[in-house]
Structure formats: structure tokens, C-alpha cells
Image (cartoon, rainbow, N blue to C red; front, side, top):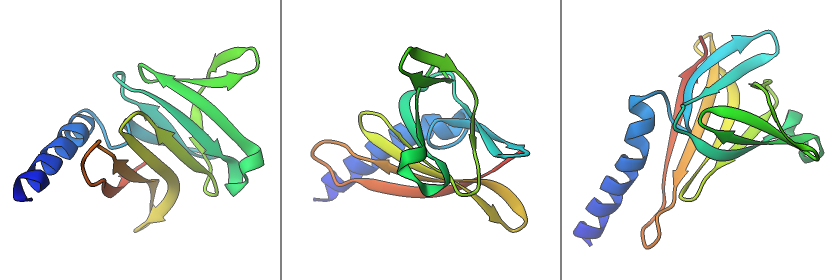
Length: 137
């Protein structure tokens, strides 16, 4: 049992550590303030899908494929390069094979930023979660 727990901890750390060394959790390299909210800038090595629920309404959602740090808004005619900006009432759900994130704009101690809730799922192991606040520049 102890061996199982240690292997899970090491596997989760292996997934989370590269992100933290080169930016933040959930593939975020940095967050930047904009007049509309917070713009997300992703790590170059990232490859995942992200859906933004605008103002908490699923019918107002946008889906992006993020490849090599570049978000592509999925449209009926393909993909369009764009910046992802989250407004205070928006919620983003990012996911790839063994991990997922929920991203929200929040204000803490007079700083605006992104709250990232990371979940790691490894086959044969108990899932692990982590919640981190990323201050917007």
C-alpha cells in the first residue's frame, strides 16, 4: 500500500513539476490583465483542448485546441488563431489524456488572477487534485 502511494505521488509530481518549472499549472505560462478580464498564455510544449463557458452559460461556449502554446478557436471552417481571455463570470475546462483543469478569474488580496484546479488521473491509481492561484501581470 505504501509503495502504491509513493508511486502515485511520484507520477503526479512528474506531471505537475514540468508545468511549474516552465510556468504554472494547467499548461499556463502566464496570465495577463486585460480590460475584459485575464488573458491566458500557454507553454510552448502544451497540447490540449479547452472549452470556455461564457458567463456560466453552456450555450455560450467556445472550444479551442491548444497546440505548442497557440490557441485555435474551433469553427465550422476549421481553426482560427486567437487569444483566450476569461471574464470574471467565465469558466474554462481544459483537458488532455491524464489530467484536466478548471480555470476561473478571481480576486484575492487585491490581486486579480486565475484559480486553477488541476486533477491528475493515472490508470490504476487514485486521482490527485491541486488548487493554485496564478496572479495576472
